[in-house]
Amino acid sequence: MPCSTGEEPYSIAIWLLENWPIVDVYNIEIVGSDIDTEALQAAARGRYGARALSKLPRDILDTYFEPEGDGHREIIRDLKESVKFTATNLVDWEAMAAQGRFDIIFCRNLLIYFDEASREVVAQNLYDALHPHGFLCLGHTESMSRISGKFTARRFPEAIVYGRG
Image 1 (cartoon, helix red, strand yellow):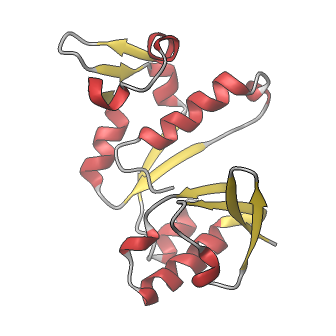
Image 2: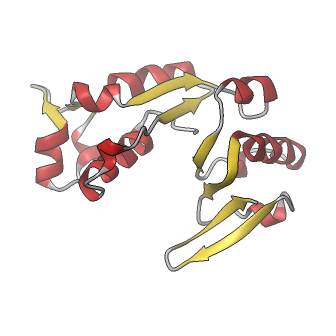
């Protein structure tokens, strides 16, 4: 969900295209949201400088980014069309409910900016936004178990995710 200027939703879309050969068989919707409408406009443009793209392999750059004359690159149109950006305040239940329900929510490194009461509201809203058996992915320094007892922690070799039972 929270996406700032779009790097994470586009990265997820690229990862799916590169690593899941039958991705087109499924109806996958990637939604990036943020409270900052200027960040969302930048995300929709999908224009990034050399520094932001410096760690991407050349084949990914050539496949998914159009070069621009000033050293920037822009996400190709097909990829832009696969990601929807929308303004949402995670503390606002109605705004969250309007987004629908999700199988997976990535909310990495955002909860650390909320006070305790707001974290609890956001946790409830994220829980409500998940389909049954959906997953919430937080940043490495965040733990839902300290915020809400509704989620079930699931440990994987590379990450801990929080499930809605």
